[in-house]
Image 1 (cartoon, rainbow, N blue to C red):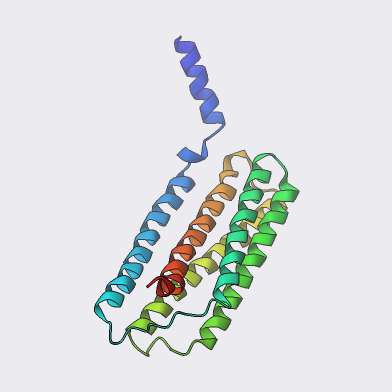
Image 2: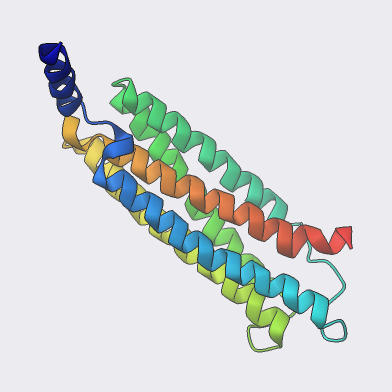
Length: 199
């Protein structure tokens, strides 16, 4: 009985679980912290929208760029999920392809967001609404850029083959961060772009 327990512990030590890796816990706490910041920003939006009837814009933002951009980011969540699955089954070439496609989609998202900022009729200094909008979307773009840097590192590691057994959790940790970035955007998109159509 004792031998069986010891054998099981040895086997678990040889194949570390992502749920117990330090990188996994690190990204979980990072997501929790950053998620709280976004929650405060979105709470500020709703608070200001309720209490600032006279100064809050009633016309909804255009979906012309925002909706396709949202679909692009959702697609990137699918490609990184596919890359993670491929890597976990030993298909490094497919995983590399998925990571590269995810990087390209993320870069397209950032580019379209910058075009949309340029086309806005308000600025960060034009009032509470403009300040909140550019702070929230700018903070999100900053997270996307961090995600792109993580993807670049993963692409380099997978391409060079330096991710050994003890490091293969890196792809899953990077994917978790990217999924977080996508989920945050859905909240931002719903708040700034869709709620004016509902009110």
